[in-house]
Image (tube, rainbow, N blue to C red; front, side, top):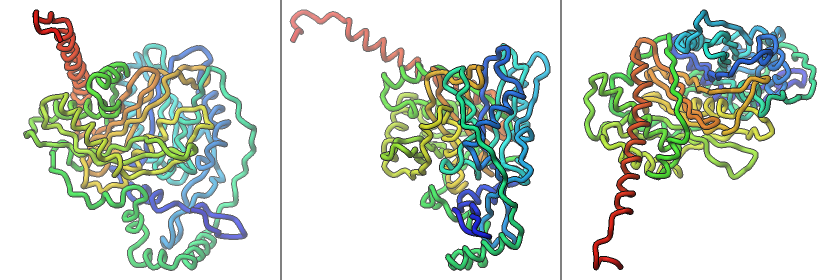
Length: 482
């Protein structure tokens, strides 16, 4: 939302939804999203200096990443984006190294600590970490971007532009950048008053309720979902979260999901949600939770959908009851597929700019948009967020280093201690699981339950195949031929 504030310059004012992520952020609920991306290590492929240079070249695609937030005195209007006069890309691109042996568990512990820390509001709201020394000759890039930044229209996730389709780094136009003058408090006030004169209702609303309350009440995505009845409480999924996080991942093969889809029907997303449902069922049982046949876990499921306009992408928000009380994995999948199809026409769609002109990696942006969708829904209306975004099935590279895996890193809500992001890439399906450190001390059980849930569906698929094969090969009794 742009508005004039002084000398003909234009202030880029945060939309109500963008601003809401700033106001909703608290000591225990940092509102940033990100991704953990693993790469194979090779001589000269990537180091800190090369990463800084790469991001410095590509940041012209992301003008928002050189801007910071300025509050308007008195809260008379939403904050504005202003150029950071002291912007230093090397402050945002950081370097870490794991001590030997550099295990995956050590990496996840580092990720957990980094994502627990809020971003510095005095600077552009993003960070990238180069993590070296991972066993198996690997390194990782961890991104953190505030949800106020990634709206898919004026800003996308930094991971989208770091990656290339080949080992040859794509050239970008050379640009020069000079920050615009930082507005004074008086100029910000003048701009707010000017906006209010053009929209008096906005000023009256802010004076009576305060801008924070206005931001919380306005939803560009799911305003009509706020009044949905609260689902039944499930103690492990309805606790106040603390400030610290846990992070873990699961690597699965896409072919297994395709096999289940071919045999059982539905979509890859339906199969992924059935896997999550089976995993949650096992995890809740391990916690001693009483589960009845009608017990459900309500999830916000933001899914990427096709747009009529080829220049746009869409994210659709669905409130879905995952049938954890259903013991039969096939019926669980069928129920999910039915509900997803039924909700398709009713879902709340959030538009985003299409990024076909970039050759990077779109899933991080789409996961960020999905997290925004989830945050727009009343926190009392669901138990967790599950995002599933398909990625390219051909390799991507940073510098000349090949990307091996990409894991979403999603935020947690005030009473939601678990979030699950899923990305498919190059024949793999990669789960990134973020959890509250104190509420989910058994995240390893969730991880194993996801693996077991896929195996359960595959076993059912194999049994179905064997039954069909047996029927097809049985001899027809004499006299029974048609």
